[in-house]
Length: 292
Ligand code: PMP
Image 1 (cartoon, rainbow, N blue to C red):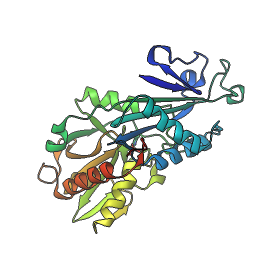
Image 2 (cartoon, rainbow, N blue to C red):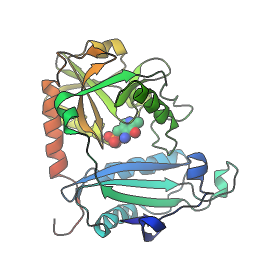
Image 3 (cartoon, helix red, strand yellow):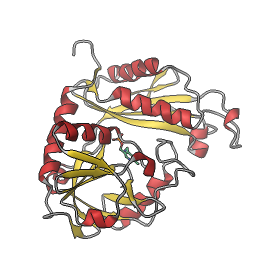
Image 4 (cartoon, protein in one colour):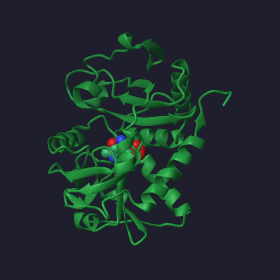
């Protein structure tokens, strides 16, 4: 495996960063998780735009243009001869001293890891997931804005730990006001009387690339989509529920806090959207190899 670090492609054992990198010392940096299907990178422009937006928000000046970054991601995939891959793109604040001051870090560090994708077990797509609400709240936008995909994921990790203790694969997170916002690493949708609902981004969620694709696909299929505030009660009485994320794609939820959702089986609209998403992911995207 060859890993890109600051202009070089290095073997895994040699791909290292300094212990003075503020990404390590403080979680100061931004990242993306991207996938390629069938030799094409899915929604690469959208992921890069979110990365550059996250960097702008934390005042991290990207050392290379978005076009160069795009080409570097594709080159990393080529060097590793990958067609179906998970790509982790990381930009840290870079090396500084032991203080917080980001101005002491003149050179951000860019890392690109491209690996074979590990898929969720097929049974979750057939039988659906069971999720539980955790006590850890999604952060205030005024503290660490969930719209920034930063290297500081402790909020989500604390939620994940609580979920694992309860035996759940994924967890439901509320914002500080108690409204449902998202999961530890996925966005949430539900359906009632044929209307698809998901929280608006200003409530304190990561604006998922998969989320946005699913909203578009649903609208194209003539399904009404509403981005609005809702509570756990709305979820408990929903007909269907599903999660979206780069790794998970579209995954059905059949139980929330021990309550069966609808008839306790993956719903019809959910199944349609799973199929529509797979079709889109397998037929679009930026080609990695010129022969594609
Ligand atoms: N919310 C959170 C907190 C995430 O970390 C992610 C990405 N894993 C998502 C939602 C889904 O975003 P995307 O569809 O862009 O992967």
